[in-house]
Image (cartoon, rainbow, N blue to C red; front, side, top):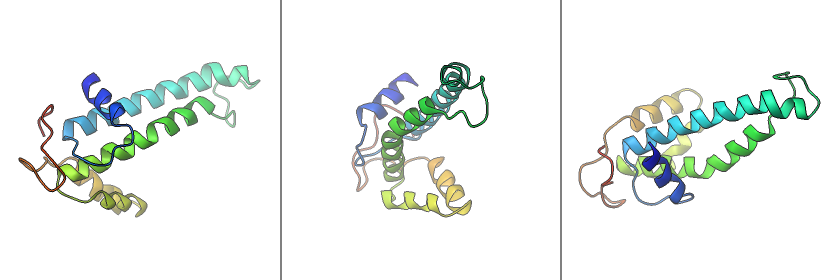
Length: 130
């Protein structure tokens, strides 16, 4: 997991090349864990410091917003590279804008193994098996 996250963060805003299935899903797990931790910190520490009760509704979540903003570009980059791994254009990620159906199509594609060998988007990811 650590190696996959480091790879994604190293390629912070890189939208070329390919990302393996494992790299993508380890990244998603990392983002979920970091988001949960930041929301807990927001509710337990930041909200009381701002004069709200712990986990009070409407207290705002400044730390969670900053974390989400910081992880946005690497998340988009790894999603585009994952689409490249299955030999699809990164523009297909715009399907996420289609409610429900777009998400389900992307989810299906993201769980598919990558194309074997090189494709038009570059060499096969060597570090992780697709």
